[in-house]
Structures are given as structure tokens and as C-alpha cells.
Amino acid sequence: MSNLGFDLDNDYFANQKFFSPTAQETVKVWVESENDINFWAKILPQDSSKWVFEIQTTELIADDNKMGTGCDRIRSLVASKAITLGKNSIACTDSDYHQGIGWLINHDLQSLQSNPYWFYTVLHSIESIFYTPKNILDTLCSCFRVHLSKLDRNFLSILDKISSIIYLPLLISLSNFNFIHRDEKKLSNNLNEITKILSQLSKNTDPKDYKDLVSYHNSVLNNDVWNDIEHDISLFIDSLMIDHVACYSMQQTIKKIQNVGINQNNIYLFFRGHDIDDLIGGLFQKYVTVSKQEKIELMVAESLRIGETEEVRIKRKQEISNGYLQFKTTIKMKSLENLEHAIFFQETFSRLKATYTN
Image (cartoon, rainbow, N blue to C red; front, side):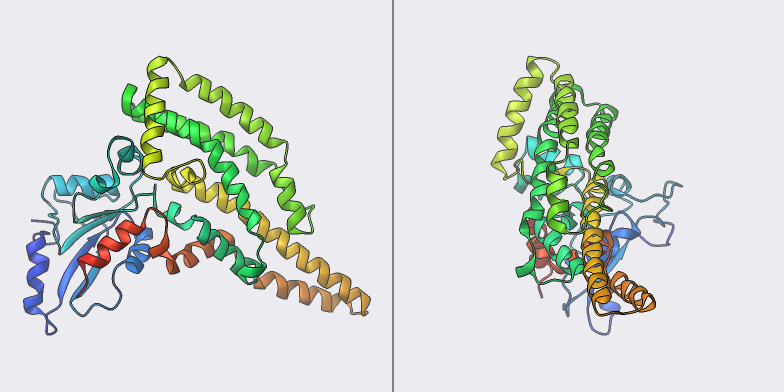
């Protein structure tokens, strides 16, 4: 019995149809946090006449005199049978490492979906789904206020560069965790080190001196900071390759993840989502800033040419600034329009749709 006053089992929610004038069945959808509700609400079927989806966190379930949220909390409540899963009670959570790339190192994608009532992002987290290449391009179009045909797709080359740098240290860290030490703290410290090294990029790509996107993009790609990053990553990799066991395990890990389609260009999607949001989201916000500066510069030149007053120019600058969107906010909204096409997440999307088709 939960502190809400009734059992949170699948049958309880299934039987609610007998008390509904429309004979609709309730599906309780357990998510990790309040921030996840909008995302999973867009995934679930929108036009079902049979199913009513109630999405909530576990915060109000305190059978064990504890209040908490998150994937571990859901897992604990399922294990204690405070929550029982079924077609009318499902869990929708981030994969993180253990149910994402960490799982795929030891198993296959099909076995990840073995519980028909637990749905994972497969990628590290919801933030990872936001930052697929298609979503980034769509978001840049909205922020730049241009049609896709006018957008320079070379901007995505920054993703390839970041992803290729993440590739080896992430795989070695995960390989060592899976096959050598099983030390969660050590894994977390290794991931923090990768993030710390990559954060140098944010500190050395100031957009204020650039008035056009092409020159800024070239300055980012050719910045000397990449040499520092690659040097630091190389030293870090050397520190991870502790013995021949680590070398062998890493080689086996690479073979396994390649078999499921993970490679140097997309592995960033399996890195910690909040770090990717900070790094890549922050970087592309700078591109938006440069685009705004470029447009203001063109406006000012034309305004001066035709003799407008400073007061008019100030008003025009404000209008241009107000029209530009924030990249990180926009990508979270734009991504909700393209979820069924998100790489690696498509399987989860299809499973939910198939499970709750009328």
C-alpha cells in the first residue's frame, strides 16, 4: 500500500476503465523528474481513444519513509513491489551508462528492450536526444531565422571533432569499468576529466570579435586550443591504459559498439547529456551571437548610408536582438517535433507506439 492510499500495481490502473464513462484505460507513466514530463508526453500516442496517460514522478511514494525521484528510485520501488509494471503501469527513463552504451558493450540492443514495460532513451539521456545532428540543424535555422537550404551544414563539423575526441577516453573508461574495476566513483572521475579537458574549448572561442559566421566557424575549427585538448586527452588515455588487460578489453569494446552502429561521429550522444548540453549548446549559442552581430552590423552600415538617426538605429538593434532565440532553450522545444527520427531512440518510439495502438 502506498502513502497515496492505494496499491500502485498494474491491475489497479487497468481496472479504472470500469469506472470511466468512456471505458478508457489509465496508463501510469513513471518518469525520473518533473523536467522529463513534457518529453515523454510527446512520445506517447497523442490521439488514442483507448488510453489515458498519467505521467508523474515517484516523489509522493514513500512506503519506506523516503521521498525521492530518479531512475534508481523507480528501480527500487519496482524491486520492492511498491510499483508493479505492466501495460497499465510503465517506466520511462534515461539509459545513462548502465542501460545505454554500458549495456551495449556486454549485450545487444534487443536485450535492452527485454522488459516490455520499461522504456529507455538508449542514448545517455533526454539531453542527448536533443543534440542529434538533425535537431541541431533545425534549431540553428530557427535561431538564425533562415531556411534549411541557406544553412551552412559545415557547422556540424564541430560535432565530429568533439565526438572523435570523446571516443577513445570514453570507451576506455567504460571498458575498464566493465571488465576491470567496477568502481562507480572512478568512472565518474574519469568522465569529469574528459569534461574538464573539453571545457577549454568554451573558454577560447569568444565570439565578440567576429562579424560573420564563416570566419567565426573557421576560427573555432582552427583554434590552437585543439592542440592543448588533444595533448591533454592523449596523456589521459595513457593513464587509463594501465596494462595489457585494459588494452585487450578496449579492443573488444570497440568491436562490440561498432556492431550496434556506435562510431567516432556519434559517440558524443552516449556521453553525459548535461555535459553535452553545456558544451555543445553553449558553443552553438556563440554561433547565434555572431549571427546576430552580423545582422546588426549590416543594418548599421545601411542605416548610416541613408542618414538615419542614432535613435532609429538603437530601436532597430533592439528589434533584431529581440528576434533571436536562445539556442539551448530552442533546441529543447524544436526537438520535441522530431522525436520519432532520433537516432538509436527510434526503437523505443516504435515500441511505445505499437504497445498503445488502438
